[in-house]
Image (cartoon, rainbow, N blue to C red; front, side):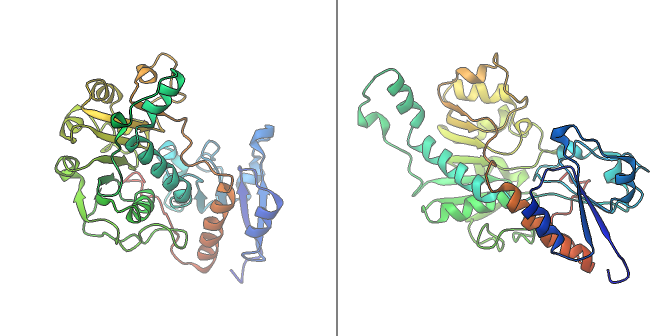
Length: 340
């Protein structure tokens, strides 16, 4: 870096002055340019030509050859499936990183909330309130987290944070992930969060052993990336393998679930309930039959929403920027063959 006068960073994400100054503080050679997409501003040819690092939501990426100096693209989301086909990101000289780990605090809270609502039958309680009915307490005996078994499918940053939180509740955690030979996680995790060393699960299963794990679970959390292998992974066969009366939560991607098969499993009562934050089509169409299911709680893709998101994302970006300048490996490099 000492022989270079400037490192050009282009952001199509609106950042405030404090956030821009935090990025500049990493190294005096850093220059930050902002293209305010919300104001209709377009990236000029000159800006693409100069950009070495691009911070973008993925909707605005240069064409191959349009940004000859581009070396690194950072995506401010954990799920990168929307940008996997972008030709510029497949250039050998370009490294792409995600924001995996940034949203785990708020998502961990959301999942615990969802588990408690399902276990304590809040759907029935709220419906009874709307109908002005006083339910008998014996009808509302909960499935407590203490002593229950929670299966986490996809033991990445979100799953690990949920496992950490469930430890204090006294729940047993079973986890499934692609590579069981490496239970540890060396990706980006905010200090004090997650399960970097794999301490909070009782047993780790390969995805191929999912059916055996699900049969023992009172609750199941889906926290998988969307890939060719995980699309509709949760289908009629998988739902049939789940423990009767078990509850499901999905905070990953809607297409991981076959929604028709889930609808059937909920209607028949094989599944006791579900909380879905993500759907195959968003917004969820008004005509979707999912809206009418009494044992389904629907939220509008809010599990990762936080007033602190951009500041938290800048924490990761600045740490990676320092690594980039020093020639060190970056956190959260996207593997395009794996799809995350």
